[in-house]
Image 1: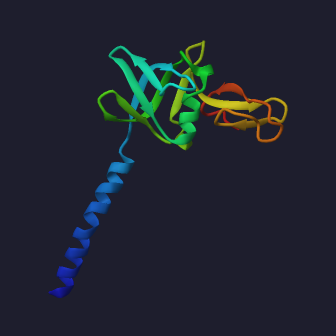
Image 2: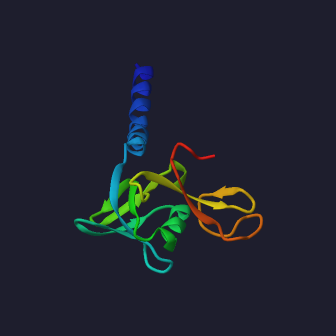
Amino acid sequence: MDAVLTRRAFSLSLLPLMQAIAAETKKGEIFHGKLTAGPTQPPAAQTAGGTIALDSDEANLKVLHDERINGFEMEARGHYTAPGHFLIDPQHTRSILLKDKDGRMKMVTYWCDVCSIRTYIPGPCMCCQKYTDLDLRPPDDIR
């Protein structure tokens, strides 16, 4: 009898853990808007319903502050944390895509044409220190 109670208690103790894992693996929402980027202003996007504040991990925030992507139509995976606030999934999940001039969704990358080094955040090349160029790439064509 004690073994049955022990197993039952153990199973019940796993319930919060299983709920947390299910919440973590829940499919996120897809957000669409026109990015308003700038080095000093908080990242945001314009939608038909108004301005939505954007937040994410440190790497994605560096991308969102890149003035070169200001005005692009964007698609982001994540979830709303409050009305008017969207939390973008971490950068390693390829959570931000921008629409190019031909209407295709592209991943944001940065390229140093001197050293042939690709990065995923704007800034100087880790080798020659030349400021990297914005290089939008198809999500399945990242090398």
